[in-house]
Amino acid sequence: MNPYEALANAIITQAANDYRKAVKFLKKHPRTDEFEADVAARLAEKEKRRKERKEKKLPPEREKKSKEERLLDSIRSNERIAQETEKFFHSEWFSRLTTIDGHWLFERIKNGG
Image 1 (cartoon, one colour):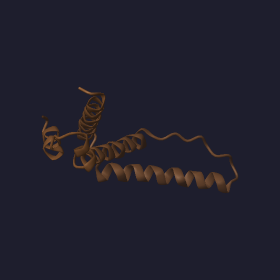
Image 2 (cartoon, rainbow, N blue to C red):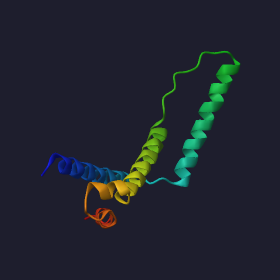
Image 3 (tube, rainbow, N blue to C red):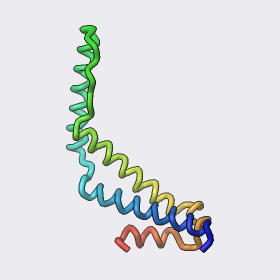
Image 4 (cartoon, rainbow, N blue to C red):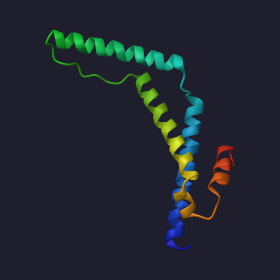
């Protein structure tokens, strides 16, 4: 196998692994309207406190993201990864890397193959 084929195979393998990992995470942590509303309410409360401190000319607090905010960020990130890797398997770039049918391969990966 020449180095370019090895690189192409590594790119495809990494995309498949990224997709599987993202889907597994999303099955465990699905995005729900209720969860998003809870996080939005928490963010609104933080913004309210931030404005109150500013009006009172108090120094800003050092704020950390809550566990729920971090989880929502992770959900969004994994959704992006799943979408981008799916697009990759259906892209012209994929067809330049290999002679394998990307649509067929993606369906196999998606169905646990």
